[in-house]
Image (cartoon, rainbow over all chains, first blue to last red; front, side, top):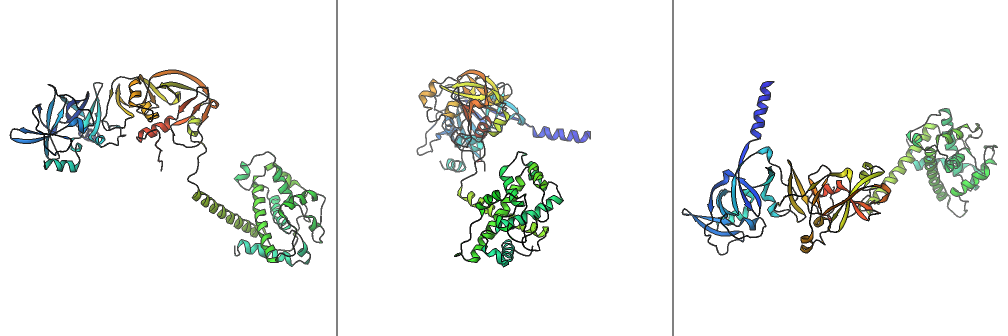
Length: 164
Length: 364
């Protein structure tokens, strides 16, 4: 009996795994992305625009010899554009087997969240951007919105990026 | 049952028509009715138990029409009385019987084909039997007892013609007639259903009204000059608006999520939801939301500018919505304050489905 209980507890513990999230700010809201998908965080650097690129692409940067496409996250999230400042960062991520950069207002910290602490986002969205949100979590009386980076772009858009 | 209903009735009337004196009778169906019903009445006398639940459920108030019909069951028509094989009794109210029979019988017209007469008579008998049976079922127990207590004699219930019809055959006949009528009713109902878009429930706010007592409390609150009422039984709480986190990709009426203790409240921009057509950017700037009116135990909170008061009102003071409409979230109108009262359950259902105020709930 005690063995079965302990097995159940271990199983429950496995289900309730602790995940690490890198948080960033965008329009005064805090978002989190899976730390495993974050490669590095850069200060803002010159972004070279690409003629004919989709509207959500700000341009490209040279990252140690590699060309990285930078996405306009505000535009992608349907938010108003904002002035760049010292807090602006480019977060280099890997999603859908591609390395891209996302422009954010600022990067805050890395937080630890149990899976059980993540709730579903209100399922009332019909817009395309609604699917980016993979969940929300209440942390220190502050809402953390968790972003599913793989869904940041559609399949076609991911393919389109490779052809830039 | 070996014969169909019509065949049985036709046979019955063929036998009746074989009687030479009956050819000139203006109406033969009451006799058949009397005979059939009296036979049943006899059976009922022999076994005075309540036949089915309908009788039990029937009201005990007196039913005049049922009594009249019942009288017809034990009475014999005036013309029949003159015959040798049916003797009148003092119990029979001939005048009342004639009056009753005038509604269902017509004087015979010599030009009409005899077959048509038979057919028409058969149809009338069939209807009369069914109608009488229904009336009998609806008849109060006391009336039925009175009827059974009437001094009926064997003479009175003596069949007009010698037809070998026992109770089982009669029951079969009646069963067949009822079955036939039921089929016809079902068919009519189907046809009606095809022509109608959908059945209208008795009251769309029935559930809410059941929950509420005759006198119940409501909270009035203001949103951009509009007053709304919410029954206190449906009020989950009132929370001061703090920081609302905007969630991307949500409808304009979804203001965001506010954390409250360990819970997350989905904040509805009430003005944007209730009157989207009037919610201009200019109006949005002037609206100053202060509180969240929580809907039952859901995660939904309606923003409001101010709380007016909580008063006790009577159910009759509300003009409840009886028919489903475009606004299932609106339970009715409070007459005195002339403001809408919320149907919170419907509202929650709509919000959960991500519907706007004018979207229809697809329950299918």
